[in-house]
Length: 238
Image (cartoon, rainbow, N blue to C red; front, top):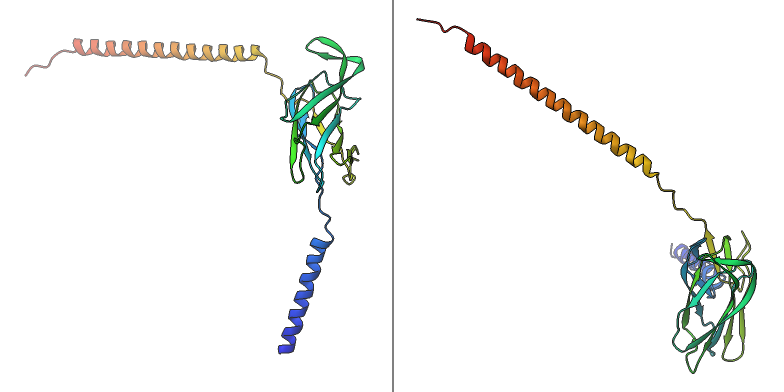
């Protein structure tokens, strides 16, 4: 009996060890990478986006971040928010056909945004930094891929430039991707329909009021006739 219990205990321990090895030993840790937040927006609109840059080095700090805007999807208006301890530079390129912004035709668009740390403002190990950007109007495309270079203080450069493959596994060094969707706003109902409904409602209310007035007059008339007949009836004598 004791032997059977020992065998069962050993089997349970072996099973637990196999499960633990499968979960901990064979599951590769997910590495952090540069992302854009939010990851979805509407075509033709404006938005505030943040490029989130984690530091994956154990010894060096991130000192430069370069974000390249896609050539096939130029954006007419790009502005950055100040990040304490970092300078920012925008590089432009010529675009053909021009990009329309508020009725104006722009022949240039931002091609790359570069943030550079000053002093000791770099992103240290175990930390991350967000770099906010305002962009619009967003192009009429399904996705925008922002290839990004992350430079460390020891000279190493991490290239986040691999584009995703539909239905495939995530690349080892994926580029930030912004998904764009069409406008879902439903067209407003014609004002004429509302006016017709209001007119119909007013007509019904008026008809009910007239009917009520006629009924009231009829009641008064019947009451008067009854009272008149009562007055004319002879009084009985004892």
